[in-house]
Image (cartoon, rainbow, N blue to C red; front, top):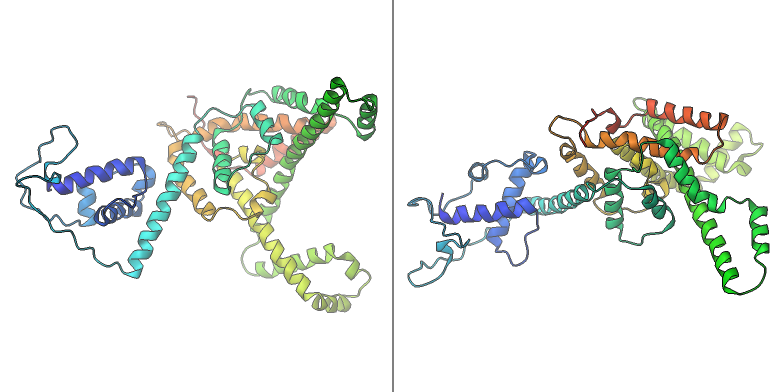
Length: 416
C-alpha cells in the first residue's frame, strides 16, 4: 500500500473514531473516500457495532485504486504526523489534481443517504453518552414536572431519550418514593373550599409577608397541579399501551374492515346528538350526509394512532422509564417530531449491544427494577392506603405481567 493511501486511511480512521462530518474544506477526493469507507462499514453493520476490520481489508473491500503500486516499503514516520510525500519542497514531485468522476443519480442518492445516516448515528451516540450519567433523582424529576424546558425539537427528543437510558433512582424502596412525592404535593393539598379559605386568611394587605404567602400559595398549588397531572398521565399511558397492543393485534383477513367499522362507531359516539333515535337505514343516510366530517375525523384518528404507536414502541424497547418521563405522552408524540425521529429510534436500538456488558447482561435491565419502584411509589401517592392502594398495586402488576418490555426480559447484571 502506498504511503499516500496509508496516510489517507489513518486520517479516515481517526475521523470515524470520532464520527465527525466531512467539512467543506476537505478535498472532494477525501470526502469521496471517506463516504465510500463509511458505506462499506455501514453495509455490513460494522459501523453500528463499533467493530472495524483492518483498514487494509476495508480498502480491499472497497476496491480502492492505489495509484502508486511500486512502493519501496513503509514510509518513515518521524512522529510529526506529516507524511513526507505530502510536503511540497525542492525536488518534490508535482502531482496533477485528481479528476472527480461525475456521480450518477443513484450514487448521489446513496451518498446523501450515507451522510444523513452518519448524522443520525452521531446523534444516537451522543444520546448514549448522555444516557450513561447517573440515574435521575426524585428532586430532578419533580423539577422536570414543574419547570418547562424550552428547547429545539431535536434537542428535546435527545434529552428525553437520554433520560430513559439513565432511569430514575434515589432509592430502591417504593415507600421512599411515596414519601418524596407526598413532600411535594402536600404543600398544596387543598380542595377548592380550603384554597379559598387560605386565600381569605391572607387578607388584602400588601406587606411583604402577605405578598410572600400569597405567592407561595399560587406557586405551590400550580406545582401540585402539574405533578398530579403527570402522575395521572402514567395511568393514561398504561391504558394507551394496552389499547394499542389490542388494536395492533387486529391483523389478517377482515382486519382493515374491522378497523374501519370501529372508527365509524367511534365517530357516531362522538356525534351522538346527530344519530340519536335514528333507525339503521336513517343512520346510514346520516353518515353519507356527514361524509366530510367523517373523513376529517378519520384523518385525526390517524395522527392519534401514530402517536400511540410511538408510545407503545418506546415502552416496548426502553421499559418503565418511558411511563414516568413527561416527554412520552400521546399529546407530545402526536405533534410533528424531528424529520429523522423514527430513524433515530431504530439506530438507538441497533446500538443496543452498547448496553450489554461483557457477561451479556443488560444495563437497562439493571435499572428497570428501580424504575418500577419509582413508578409504584409515584402512583401510590394518588390513592389512599388500604383497599384502594391494593387495587392499584394489582392493576400495575397485571399490566407489567401482560405487557412486558424487551428491557424487562433481559438478563440482569449484578455488577453496577
